[in-house]
Length: 141
Image 1 (cartoon, rainbow, N blue to C red):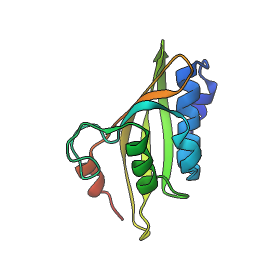
Image 2 (tube, rainbow, N blue to C red):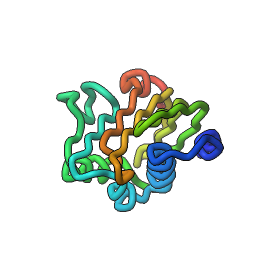
Image 3 (tube, rainbow, N blue to C red):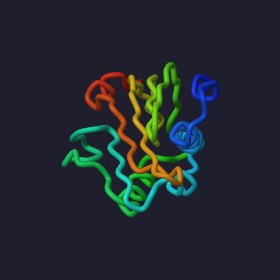
Image 4 (cartoon, rainbow, N blue to C red):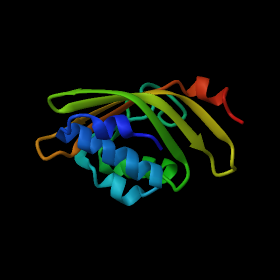
């Protein structure tokens, strides 16, 4: 995991939530990752319709995010390489590459653009992850 660019950037509540989200997801610490989210949060990962979210509307609320977490946040499953970050107000974005490892050992990667928005208490209200599901399936090895 390489998130040094995030660690070196000015620390705002949104960037702190972004950093913690990436760290916990990379470590497979799903219960702690879930605690980063506000009760009414939305996770769109990936943004738009996909096999993870056929409606494309996202996983809305902690119960839905908990199911998403159980399905996707596990030790050794996700690795981030973040190259750029920008932020302002209650939002932060990061751009990089994500590598995933399925339970069967298959690995895939793709480019990713993540948007994090937080509320006044620093809880994530929106995690919108832009990446191409179909393109990722073509990188499986």
